[in-house]
Length: 244
Image (cartoon, rainbow, N blue to C red; front, side):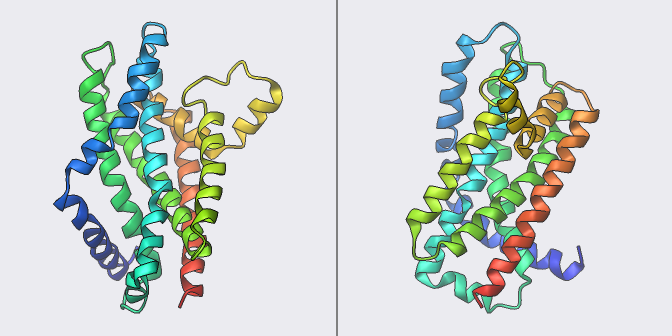
């Protein structure tokens, strides 16, 4: 990344982060859903399953926040704020990455809160693995955020289209990745669909890294994250250029 693009990205990132700085309680309110999942599912899990379940919840939190990112862009397009950003001397890729990185900040904060809550309850904290896992998750989140922005641009003026496509893709991805339930003993056709889901490799990587294991699962997770990020940025930049 060149110095100019990095500077542009930080400019956009700081702009997008201002509402969160003014209202940090939004991070706390964003904790409601993951805490509900932890509270309702944890009692149903065998002893020791928190080590398996918590990384999945962290990935789910990231997936939800970044895939919803396009809704904010739709609001900006309706007010004309997006068009003003497009005519500014800022790289299109920086517009995408800066916006998507902002969505990662609440995810990191919420992850820290989740780990503080579960560590006293038989969850083993492996900090180096957690840090590496969050880096992979940030790369993946940039890709999903960029794809969400691309969808928002394509669906301009048709909010129903954005939400229909987003919800149609979101939950199958989540379930096929084995975030809430393992798919190891699923029928062959379901396992094949899971193998084609990039989120599966992200979840496997996070579970391995949160357990302190740096190996093949982490490597495949990084590959999947980079692939999603590349796809998101390519489609996102193309979509933004068409709006000029």
